[in-house]
Amino acid sequence: MLVLVSTFLRLLYVLPIFNPTKPCPRLCGQPTRLLVVLGSGGHTSEMFSLLHDLDPNLYTHRSYIVSSGDDFSASKAIDFEIGLKQKCRHKQEATDVLSTYDISIIPRARRIHQPLLTTPISSLRCLIACFSVLRAPSTQRSLRSGTNQSQAKKTVSETPWCSYPDLIIANGPATAVLVIAASLILRFLNLRGTQGKMRTIYVESWARVNSLSLSGKILAACGMVNRMLVQWENLSKKGQGEFIGALVQ
Image 1 (cartoon, rainbow, N blue to C red):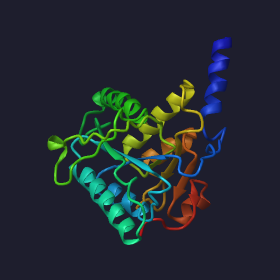
Image 2: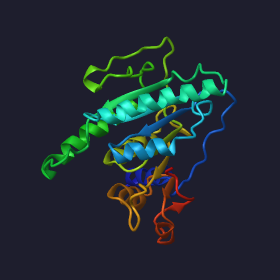
Image 3: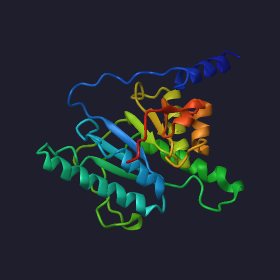
Image 4: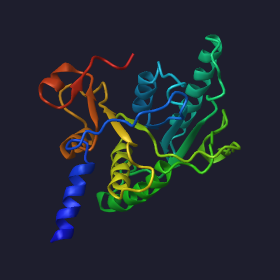
């Protein structure tokens, strides 16, 4: 009985809806890791529109999660990083941090037309893969421009990157639910280095006008994210999220 009560209380402590923890104070110049969950097609395009004004001096390492077979999102991530580097060069800013990004490929939670009977198995594979991504690649990696996932080559830097993400941002794909669930499990286990880490922001797709997506409904109902942002005011009026204006340009 005591174990059940302790487990329940620990769960309440971990869920953001019951314990909206603040981010840990960060010293000037201290590395910060941002983890971005990419969907496919429209989700990816929206995500990079959201990140249009990202300051790489604030988020010194960017991790991108891509589902297997999604070459489009992987190439868009590379293009985005190239664009960041060019912007900083135009502003005559330091560019030494811009090479610190990685793209991780994980199994799809559910493929199109996949039978529901096998979905729990594929979702479990995806969840397990999320743990290793959250715990950070042992070395910094990037995909070379012009390659697809099957031809991807690892570029290894001399400096290992070992840190849980400071912030996770997602905007709709089913994979996002599993990534956020994995982050909560790690925090529940109170592993070393998880304190004050892996805060989550979920941005509902611009296409969701009258109701949340299935991913959004699951995350909102379970109180799994620190902030649930919607892009239509009527959703906020229904109590389905926080409206701070249209975020997609």
